[in-house]
Length: 241
Image (tube, rainbow, N blue to C red; front, side, top):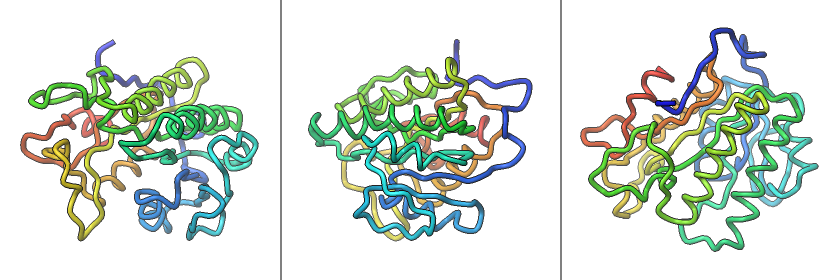
């Protein structure tokens, strides 16, 4: 169907305003920074493992395998930013399966059952890192993971499309590049070449993914503007502004 996005001619339910925003994986590197960035913009709820330190008053401790806890977390929520996962490229399948596969399904299901308007899913460049190094990857390109972590992110993109087309959720998946926080350098990994994603740019992309109107499903690339970027951000600019 061409570009991996389709829009609606009429607004989605709840599109007029953004209500409560739930952030999963809230104690992680991206989650903690994003919560600080939007503290004055949204009514926030956060969830992570019970032992994690989260600086949000409305905190619902939840393991991603705990369906009941995720159901509580999604109550009265407009948008979920799903960052929770095992982010390690070297993670074993024994960890990826419950956290990135079962947990992602549990989250989408809880969001759907609770009547959530939109899920912003943190996918990854690793969902397409199996392509040759010289290829610029567009949002239209199908998943081609280069490792098992990428396989789990490709699963999340596909699951999101199912919940969008078959269950009525609005879903935007962000293929996140080589993210690093302000004042630090990206990890010295070969895949980071031409994948730079500044902290402020990622937070801006997430905000736009929360607030953009009339999108039922989309996969967009998330890197900072740069010459020769491995991920083509044309569709990101067109869809999110």
